Length: 506
Ligand SMILES: Nc1ncnc2c1ncn2[C@@H]1O[C@H](COP(=O)(O)OP(=O)(O)OP(=O)(O)O)[C@@H](O)[C@H]1O
Ligand SMILES: [Mg+2]
Image (tube, rainbow, N blue to C red):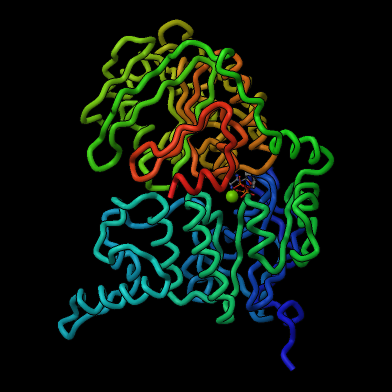
């Protein structure tokens, strides 16, 4: 008789694993057992230790206390290559595709098929890549240059590459945070198929409902410790939030689930930013909208719909082909980020790493956007640090030390630093793309409160997201984008549901 998966001996096991960085503890006496043929969810607040745990499994961190067993045998990986050779594949939170290579070259990055002359056999490689992509139902050309694909597709290519290298344990660190709902579903279906073939998967995610739906087993880390490992069947979303966050869970959850009390038309301030038929050929067409003082305008669209390019254009990172932008009723030229800043705009992009200096301390990253001002009339490093400390407190950035390099913070905390940069001097218009991506429920609530506070102070906010919940919970007004066009602007008294958003976005 076949054993139920949860009773089989673990394929991989950690016992009493402790890991610290300098003096700070990231994992504290953690036990972790992976059963073969299961999907194992790893949940926890930002900074709880999830990425650290899987980086030990994948050979990135080689210095730690405790033991690791693979198929019951003690192992000690000396490098990521070691772990890979043992069949452990890892998809990192940050993309590591080769941007200048094609999809096929990425998939074959380590073992390109050679012909008799010892040269790469392109035809064989492209053909094999095509078959592999078809198995994954990935609609992307094997010949496409990866750097030109959307973030979501790049991520799918990375996953395809790791699967292709024959991994039997596949670790996915927040794989869906950059994916549209449809792509995420496709990935989950694929993960289940792999499970059916006896492979073992670890899924790190902040989407609790997804974890409960997709995973067989759930482990929750809190303050560097494993607080529970159990079958996901036995947990509710409330249980998970409670175990992750502790006593404040109920308040936090309510604040997030609470829909924003929408501002009525009369309470709205004057129009600050207006777009009249702005167009970037092949990306978005004839986009018109008005953004009012103190208003949060939600822009919903699937990944690849052109929303993120629209945001980039508003901030002068991409040129418009035609159309008109007006600030306070007067036409403005925004051709560079500098011109955008002068006009009173601020921008938080979706790719946080592109706007951080990872080797620099937190306080420098917070003040960089305003360096010109600081140099101009403050001229005092102590003040720079003090400003950073205020932001660290307001945003609960952890650890709360302004002198740590930003690259050592957990993913969610890096995102808060990006926000902090812009909050020192509130702009007139704030364009936010996926501001809560990668954040735990508690951090999400904090950022959302902050956004609401800014809008109460009169800042006009354009909130761009592919997460229906984020848009629904925060917007005064909602606009939907599909394939580069506005397909819907919901009226004030019109009911908006998740289904309606998805329908207009399709
Ligand atoms: N390379 C590093 N250097 C110094 N400290 C680190 C490093 N990597 C992680 N840490 C610290 O270890 C702790 C755990 O971080 P980790 O990245 O594992 O969190 P996480 O659970 O993955 O969080 P998130 O959900 O935000 O990604 C954090 O306090 C973090 O600042
Ligand atoms: Mg992480």
